[in-house]
Image 1 (cartoon, one colour):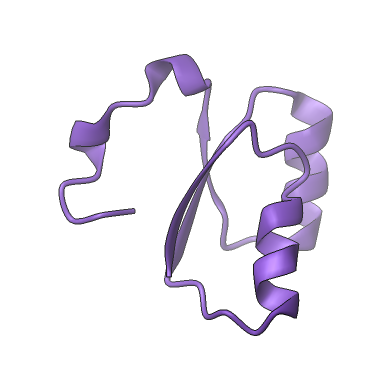
Image 2 (tube, one colour; image 1 turned 120 degrees about the vertical axis):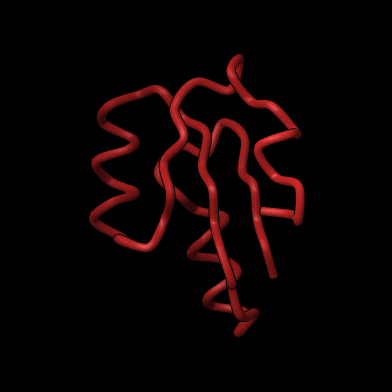
Length: 65
């Protein structure tokens, strides 16, 4: 599954998908809180942190996440 998570927080969606056994091909997270990002990075280093959701552009994902 290719995932784009808005307001990702500490990455609980990523954890939930992994716990359910859903394979994650890519995971792009939009979050600005530095403490939440630090926690998310501690949970998984494969998450691609994209920053502020206000700068999301669908054109960045021509083939999905």
